Length: 175
Image (cartoon, rainbow, N blue to C red; front, side, top):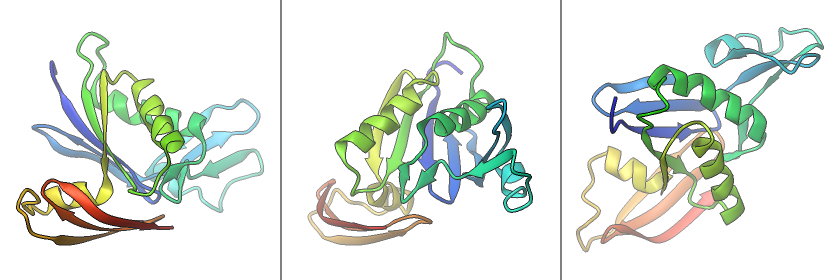
């Protein structure tokens, strides 16, 4: 696992985790269930999603990301911790991560994402805007001096961008 590279999509609807050489290892609903009395995590992902609308007042089922940004840092931290245990269990060989974020988030929201990911044993965190990540995933050559319109429709935001020469020329993020 030395030098492991991972990619994370903290989507409003789904949490995805890609590991270099293994592919997508996590693709689950971005939901977490917490016991209100003890503040203990009851379930994460699919198990928590199945609990939506079916729990007592004692168990709270929450989406830690809304509108493309982290709405509950503590619960996002618990979610990341749960999934990153599947990828690495060594504190010696900490992975590097690329995290897809909506193009319209603020610096404070960017800092929250970096802090949440770095707090869980990631040695280097790089943020990439969702339209750029979508273009790279679709194997679009954005290095050419030609405009490419990319529309990334997510569960919480829709990102629209024109890409050219390895950058975003124009962008809009709609919640």
